[in-house]
Length: 253
Image 1 (cartoon, rainbow, N blue to C red):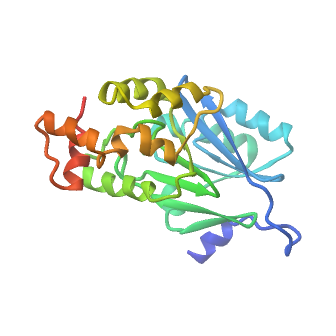
Image 2 (cartoon, rainbow, N blue to C red):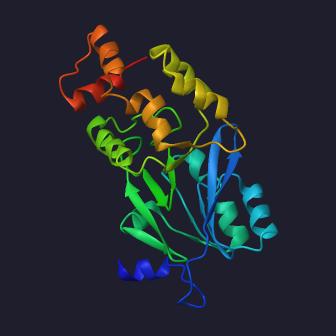
């Protein structure tokens, strides 16, 4: 593990100085997919690099060296750009099973925390650096991913882990499902003004939410709220325990 950590560490060139500023760049591809670059002034890491040409152009324009390519999970719509980006850049691919062994990657003095978040897939992971959280298909802006594993209990644990992060954390998801998600949320909670506010601030050129937003608009994170509990009870769904409420919310249509 120590050798892996050294291999994926990006350290300050001169040492002893202040950590460099870290930026996150979002790239849309295939209509609603998102890929990301995390970068300093010199080095970059691509996550779900499906927007091949846009990513390569951005790296070239900003004089960056792409060091690593990795994924939030192994579904092909997230891994489709890996080969082309690796070939063009000479970057190293870090598979999820390798990167998930690390508590964090050291990136120019900033730890990038790696959270295993099984549920959508068994290999789903999230990346947390400073106030940025790249969530893949685990947590979307206003909704959550399908539980293709069938393991709702592990998905619940994953979502609870993300819910415990600071409320100013910015959620950068793997798809733009905002409009459909908010339409569903509004059907459930027509008097929820937070939904209207979020839709007014929605920018398709830079799609994100804060965890504070999610706790106020996302029905799949609001399973402890009285209004959602009342909806579940009215539909005859179990609500006695928190896990039952989560399971019931996941069965709403």
